[in-house]
Length: 251
Image 1 (cartoon, rainbow, N blue to C red):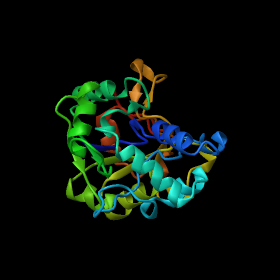
Image 2 (image 1 turned 30 degrees about the horizontal axis):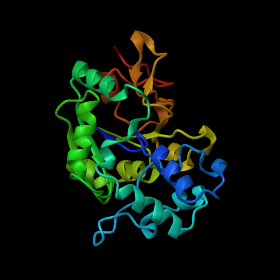
Image 3 (image 1 turned 135 degrees about the vertical axis):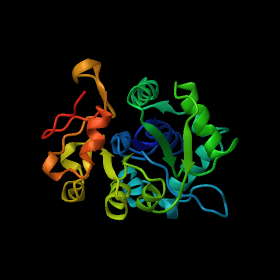
Image 4 (image 1 turned 180 degrees about the vertical axis):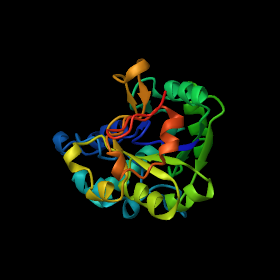
C-alpha cells in the first residue's frame, strides 16, 4: 500500500511555535483566541518571488481564528521564516509517532511518502530540513515531496492509495480528483468537522496513533462507518492499522 502523510498538523507541531511567536510580537492578543489546535496547524502558501509566506496567501481560517490582521499574520510568518532550519526544529504532535509509523510501515510493507507545501525558510532546502527531522525521529531514508497545487492530482500522479492530511480542502481534492482515499486528521472538536467530510466519505481521525487498540496500538483510528467510507477496504485490511466502526481490519 502506498500511503502519503502531510506533515504540519498531522505529524509535526507548527501550531505551538506560531502561537508563541504571535504572542511575543503582539502581546495584546488574547491567548484564548489562539488556543484551538486548528489555529496555524498548517503553513500558508509562499510568495514565489519573495520566498516567504505572505498574509494574502494565508487560508482564511488561519487569520480569523487567530484574530490577527493580515499584516500581523505576515509578521509572524516572516519571523518564523528567518529562523535557520526552522522546519527541523518542530516537535512531534504525538511523542514518538514518527518511530512508530516507521515500525508499522516496515511490519506491513507500506510505501510511505511525506508530502508538504511548506514555504521556504532560512537554511537548507525544505526537503533536506524535513528529511533530517524525520530521520532524527526514527524514520530512515524518508521520501519527502515538496508539492504545490491540487492534492488530488498529486495523489493520482504518485499512484497513492491513501492520503492523510489535516486540511479538509486537501482531502476533498483527493477524493474528487484521484482514486485514492482520504483521511482527515481533525484535532479540534468533533462537532466542528466540516460537513463535506462525511458527505464525501472522507475518514476522520482525531489522532494518528491510538494506544487502546488491540495488540498494543495502531496507526490511525478511523470512526467513519464503512458504508460511507471511500478508503479502499483492501487497503485497510492490508494495513491492519485502521479501525472502522463498520469493518474490523484483519490483523
